[in-house]
Length: 299
Ligand code: GLU
Image 1 (cartoon, rainbow, N blue to C red):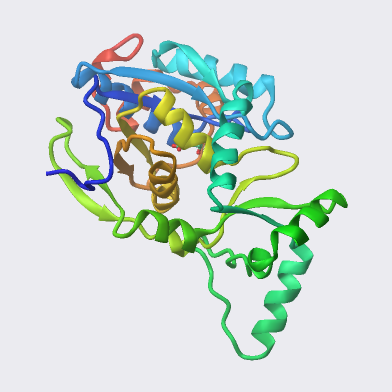
Image 2: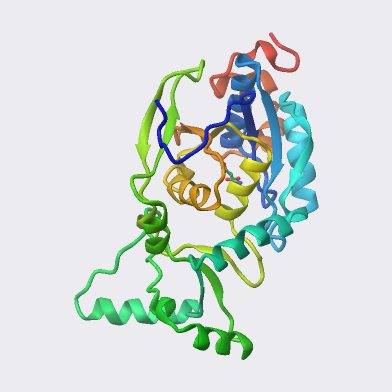
């Protein structure tokens, strides 16, 4: 049964990805995700791809990227090339953003961080509890969602700083709810349950900024589609963010991958530190709960 009649499903080879950001060292949680993606790809005769999520060019470094490849090779994770590096594809994200702007679903938001804080503090001082997103951050007040096109153009021409934000109410109205995704829980990828997306819980999220002309959400949905990702296996920390990504997939007419969530039990111990302390790849595979017979130097 289709989870959502509006969406096309991928009839292709099961395709998995590991998508780290090179803004720090890989840790055990990453190892768990990479190994599980690889194991699922193998078990299902599918593909395993690697994507480097380096849109934040101020925090991502070539040294961290090099250590990702080194840690993965040590661990025995193999991927099909070429690696997709997001910083080389800003034009793809820009194109999708332009489409959403043309569709009137994205608007320039001019409130600075300080103005947002002051607005919320003022509102809360009058007894109103300001709504927060699932990560605990206050929702964008969206005061400027109602600005006229003329006023927007004027402010932009004057060089006022702004971010492009998704008008989540307009977006939800455009596609029509409910919006769902399929979550699978077994190795054979056959058992799925339908999860209902709640994109409004995130408010008007940022889709692009001046200094970074895209965002995590926008780049991920474009890349998952371009790389033909059929199954997204990711940590609990990003589980609820799937709601926004499903909404963007619908708005941009992109296919819908299935999902699997990883429990948040994995420690943030760095892999390089574990390696230096003498831990073997086999031990990391075991810690991740993945059959270690495929690990380098198996027992
Ligand atoms: N780049 C993200 C991270 O390192 C993961 C991306 C995703 O699974 O969507 O946490």
